[in-house]
Length: 452
Image (cartoon, rainbow, N blue to C red; front, side, top):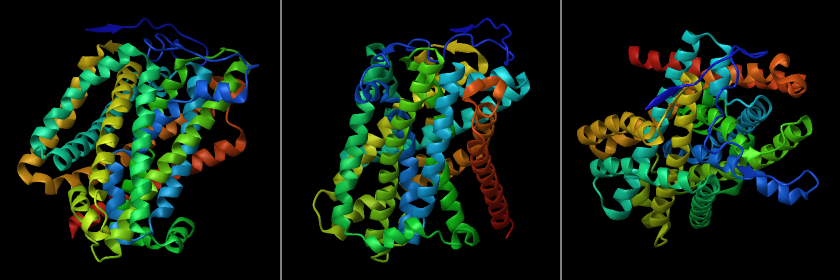
């Protein structure tokens, strides 16, 4: 069922790299020689960035973006922009760690920290993955309910069957998984591109929202809560572990020049993919602001309410159906990447290997049990609060992934000539500290509200 992997010391690390990350697909995808054209090499390295970008447009984002747009108009667009820029920076560090050291972030943590510290980081990461999986479960169940009338409780249970899809795709090759993910991302993008056209937003308001951050974000506890939920939904901790592993599926030359090229093209892939994620996240908030806030529906945070109101408010037949279809694509997309992230984290931190179907069932059970309890006790009305809470949990765990990542990639002994230059070190630590301070402020605000 589970196998332990032999460990031996290695310079700069407590242990050797051991089994490669995602061993069954490690270095299985051929890349052209360095003399090949730019576009051939870019296509060969394209894919991992889109797998990561999925996590930046999962159903948890929908809840926070809908709540932000319907209640605060375009104000929180600046938060989405800032979060996306931070994501691009942090994902580039994850790429560098994986390519240069041959370790994913979980393996690097195990190889650097003491066993108790590594175990603690693993527990925190599993909590984050469970919170993310919870958002996927609820989002898919809501979409099934909206499109086909399947009761929420049954929809939650049906999502457990996606383990069969994952097993089938993994057997067929990693490129098939990437192709399916990119297709689903395209579906989401087209749906929301049309929704923006239907909603006729204020482009002046959009520009102001993006470019002029509001001090109200800090002073208003409700806005701060949603803002940090957006941060948690955008910069997702498990994506840092995932990206540092999936970049190693490419069979690039393990030389200085080969690694430099892999970092370059993988970073382009990641930046393009995350730019698409920025468009989707912004589009959800813009549609919510232009449709609900403008018409006085400032309390819309439930995905089901948004579905019901879109067609009558916009006067466009099929607007609600496209919304639900994009939600289903989002939930299923996130399932694919959540499976890989769970495998990477467990194998990396614990240095053991479980069969993929067993690992997935464990993760799904952790997410399905609270989702079933909430839907049975509170019905569909409780799901939006659970979605937003799941994103805040992700944000609270984020620092425990970001600080080790910045620390490792800034370590000359571990990274050699690929160590972060001084300006990247400074910027990365600013981002890491900024995230930690925001989360501490959220805790203070939350406890203050509870004590009133």
